[in-house]
Length: 590
Image (cartoon, rainbow, N blue to C red; front, side, top):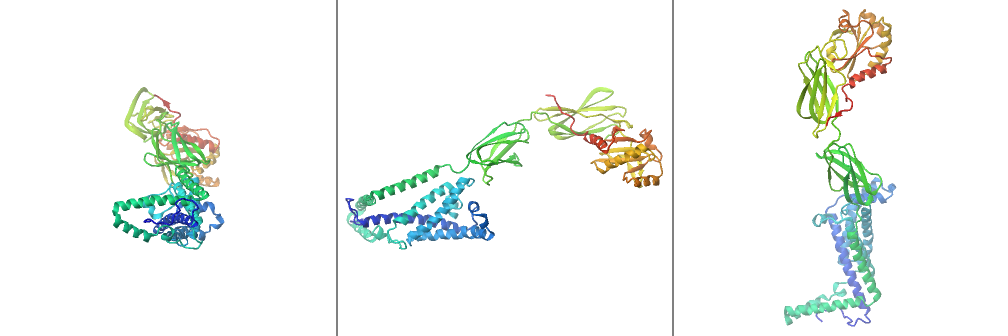
């Protein structure tokens, strides 16, 4: 016969033991070749690109190994020697042994622990989630042929495990024997080649090809009869085949890797929104939010694994585009990018930090801030005339500054600020109080400037404290009420209130006597000497103690405020400091 494999029993009855052994050898041969090719590719790919242990393997070992065993030396051996070098070398050697038929049964048994370890790593990665590719399954070859997912890698591990069992149970020779040549197991290649040459000479190419195709079909039918000669063997082989096919198909489509199914937005307002995230597996999630300029805004995390998470986002800006990503179980990998835009603001812009500065004989400057960009509009009028004058500047800004000119020292002035944002929302705010350009020792008037010498010999100007709150205390050493107030004033000085200075003006007396008195009382105050009573007269001081509180613009805000403790005086000072803060609740005008 030109295509002589072995002596077949065409009837299929009483199949000789030799034929059954040959069929088992063929199955063992095919299985060992497949395992050998996979292990050869895996081991060589990893050795051609040696590196430290992949993150998935590191996480797997850290999760299953007792922490007491993970000493620095053990970790170095595992991550820098065993995983990147020893295991790939073992795969390469076993692959070569299976391909050349060197003790294939022993090699198959040694392959099983490796396959189980690889499968365990992939099962752990699938159940934990967060890993989109296998942990360097084929090394450098993955850069050419692509990466496998943990699910695909697990399917290959299961097939390799079944093939290794096939080699172990069906290898026809002894445990430590080598595989016989292909001629002994399957084809008598030399005789077949001789017959092939003879037939080509006698019958030509076409007829010879037809003869060999017919012979091959006949031989395949005979192989099937050899395999199915024992119904139990046939049933086992068919069951194994369908089990491998079903397992591979199921794992290829099974959705085991945790992933984001959907992301939806709800309750979107001008400053907040709710993000609802739906997963296919219960997991915790972390949402990382950035604005349209890719500036990090914040991160929100959940603590309880679930398939549905509703995360409220707050502290957002109106009419602003944001984008965010979702990661599972605090892993480095994340989902795609999702975008949303907050609604325009519902409330008008807040007006705050209203201050008066640079007051002269005919002008004053008003500054303020708004919570978001808004227009610059201010109306002002005098006490003697109700006619309002408006100053409007184009453009939107947060910091606003307007200088009012053509003012009179003989009048008191009021003003009103209006702010309109880009969305048409407007707000009005009035300054808590009034101002005047007149210089007089009266509330709302400009405080008279002066120059005095201090007790330590330095020269002090009132105007040098422009921009600060000045507490002006007129006192006399022989005044009992003054002596009671000085310790309270000392407490206020010791508090070091920001942007505040306390000036104590002594009306008359000898410097040495005043200095000795302060030392005896343990007082450390800035004392100015009004030797000619010029400042006393300018401020109209008739009796002591007399106390004025002057704001940063040089306008008197309080005269002789009542206080019986340092705390009460401190609160009054803070009122002046806070007079440039928010002026109540703005009134919407649209």
